[in-house]
Length: 209
Image (tube, rainbow, N blue to C red):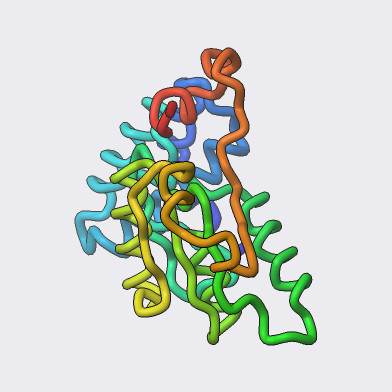
């Protein structure tokens, strides 16, 4: 809602994205985000940086990976985004909101585990909502675990989050079943057979595993 409107000189960028198969509304939204990021980082050279960003987007790279950070409810700091770690969806924010509402009137969970942490969005958001909680974030991907650690540090909750690089089933063998009062997870749910039909942004840039 705070993004600037597409100005006339950015129409060429929108047209380039439309030619790459992105519908106009999505192309315009992409250019708004890319232009805002280019202005923040590029100084007087922002038009050149915008052209680089648009070229990447025309190859169907997700905006989140291009700009490198993305807002996530209810965090004050944007989360770092890096391919191939999965990008949080609006449904991920909805899950966090449901967890918040589930604990209205209480102090919230004291110890919880986030299985398949990805960028760390869920664990970090819940730690920001529940200041007395501690958490473990488990992911089989080293890239995801590394990104979770970076985002936890960025958002000031790293002292309450243990990041574990492991398959969940292997990690589970090392802990007691009553160690946690909440298990939360938003795992990938696309069947492998459907991957070829997904958008190029997902198929070509997010972790197929």
